[in-house]
Length: 344
Image (cartoon, rainbow, N blue to C red; front, top):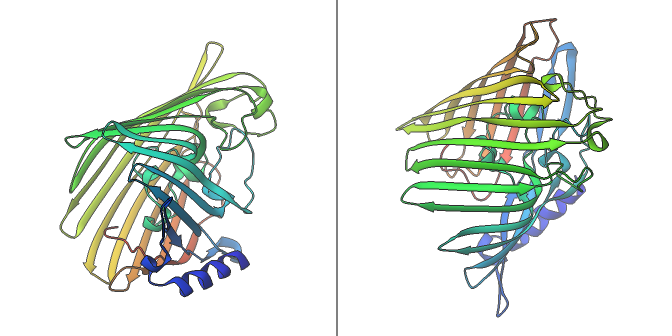
């Protein structure tokens, strides 16, 4: 937390943001992003906890409108390494993004620790979030950032992109390369796209994880595939987001599948007040009965005029098919970012 207090002090001394730009012949150094999202979570059984949440700070260096680099500092949870490699994730502060970027008419190239940008939610910056990440990320089925190479190009509202990466969000242990891609159509108030990922794992990296997704045996080699569709639509005060993905684990001749998806509906009552509802579902193994999880959430968002300050109250009810687990929660989040948010 002390780190973020220092960042706040530096930012206050540099306000407005434009004053933090250092112009030299070698390019420009800018504050790329500054986000504070402290929160308090209250769960069943009278359990409560404070956290810095998705708070982070990023710098961007630019040269000749083509070359740039980004460094983002934040909690390790912003990497969201997948559960098949490790059972838990520490909350220590680290470099969650560190990549070089090149832009030209032929596309955008990145190399380093890059955002994986899977689907619609995976491309959203943390400052745009209202709810905690959906089951796809909460269960750590999908990483948010990883070490690798990415490319994206767009033309006449159509776009495509891919990431070739380690799969482990850190040092590669098993020597296996993963491939994540997206294809879509985007205009001002509508987006439709498809996303997919494939890769393999070795026991050298999964053996101690204890993961059970799609019935995986972590002591053996495994092949993973996942794909699905996402759609976002905005109409005046309304906004709709739908995502649905199906994945499978193949070991020898045995294939087991899982699925996950969510639907978000928001309504902007005024510039200062928005309500957002979410339905989220996750079935970790389609061959196993009574393991489906469903979550219903409602958020009340109170914003200032520029939406640089958002007070978010979220209530979530989890419905399990099997044994009932006391994991319902109420979360209060204060999201502060000088960049603001145009739409939820």
